Image (cartoon, rainbow over all chains, first blue to last red; front, side, top):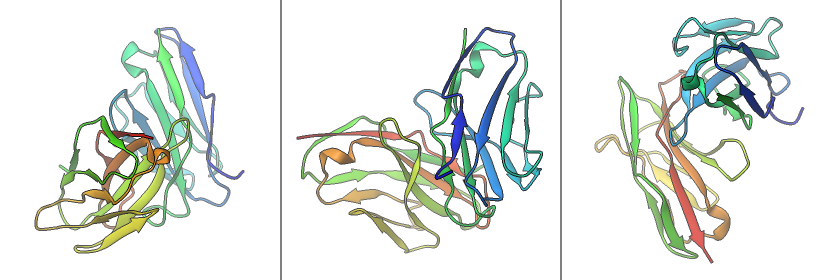
Length: 114
Length: 112
């Protein structure tokens, strides 16, 4: 596609449920990043993929959060046993190569845990 | 650790006014510095960047100079337009790095 696509755009879930957030990067981009943006804050790094592997997952807040990118393109961020504090906008970005060139961001998925 | 501090908003200006949004940073080494913009209903977009000291990034009439001595990267525009209304984020990334650290963002409103 023309840009980074994230689905769904909005997700409301009950506390304790499992959610999956999808990111479709720009075709040909090998680097993919997930960020989390809480209300009134800047994006906070979660994880970076170079190809299929997670090159840095140091930003994942705890073991309830997990992300995959099995074929080196689409990525899924998975959150188990959601908590109200997980409510935020989850942003995905991609770039041609990690650490180089501009990162292009999707419009994000707004997750609300009730 | 690395961090970015930018002026709190919102900033409200009349059209054609001069804009400054202050940004200072703390970092090890020699980071690259960025300004991102988020227009209403759109994703984050890179506005400009500078990769070494004394570099000036510029785009769409905005500019910012990488000042190592004051660890600053203030965003300026000589004459703002209503269409510049958005949230602006200052950010840094270590050389060759991929983990971008963002400031909290500054919302700009420009009145006609």
